[in-house]
Length: 210
Image (cartoon, rainbow, N blue to C red):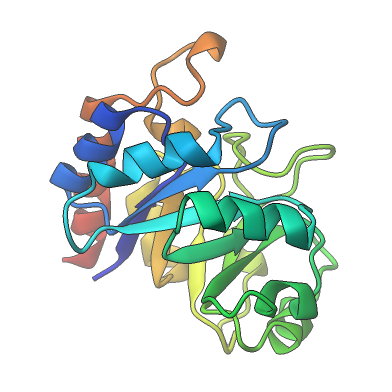
């Protein structure tokens, strides 16, 4: 069964909606330039409302080791997600399981990337959009993903209730990751999730698993 991560959580009701609809994980963005950014203390408050068996994921973009360590001292997430240009050595130094995100475009050697980050729990594959680090709502060509990739794939980038079934059937990822695709409509609503869209997204995932 395809696992589901709802990223960019900023409100208690959104964390609970994700959990109640069947999400396996929720993500907290520790990147100040993101409209979905939360402070570590706020993330810790949000984690308190999560029921058992729902994993918390902390997203970092080119943070220093000190910043990551300080964040973890205030909000102990279950899994790290590195979404910038972090080296494998950087990612593994914290002694915690991690995901390494990669923005996919033609010419990127995903097989070599998987070898470089061989101890990552998975590769999170997102759309490449110049000047951004995710959360854009853009998709990418799923045919660029090698069938023999040696790490589990977390598929991200422009997923919605309308396209997630086809995405899973095409890629067969271990998990899917959504943020903007389950938010209220409008640029002012980034980080504000829509419980109805979350439920529809989960239904789309389950339909692909039938």
